[in-house]
Length: 219
Image (cartoon, rainbow, N blue to C red; front, side, top):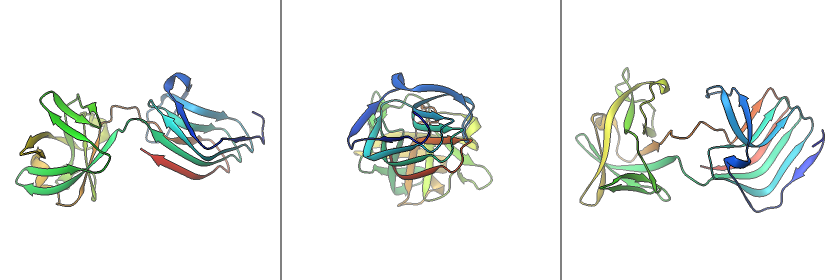
């Protein structure tokens, strides 16, 4: 690929996995320095254009779709980027009784409670469920309208952790935690697995005059 070249995609679905990704050690914001997996990586290029023409990039692993490093005057446009597996799940807080919140899953977010464990979108949640909590505000760490639960106990993410558990009662999904009293009925509960690496859909490093437009993320 030479400076000033354009890459034009035909509209359609293009599937990529980590096996086809470029490996690069790089430090990105909100990320630890380390090796990143990128499907399309451009380094020290000038004036290139990557036009998806409405194409969908379907990622089947924890990878970034696009990466630009040391580039100038580059353009990325008209792509839909989708991940095969969800890592965030949304639920609605319907009713609160004491330390219990009765919740329902939103369209497209399947949460199942079984004797063999808890499953979100068919993915078994194997780690301890915990809630990040802001001790100063005496409420869940993240502000309204989203509350936040994760399935690790990674203290580097800030806040302290309060125990939380899911179970079923009379066919309803129930969340129990001492911080439920800080929640509000009708708000959204965001579940995040954090078992993936932190990957950006597209990242820029040491670039000048970069333009990104028409980029849609389904995540």
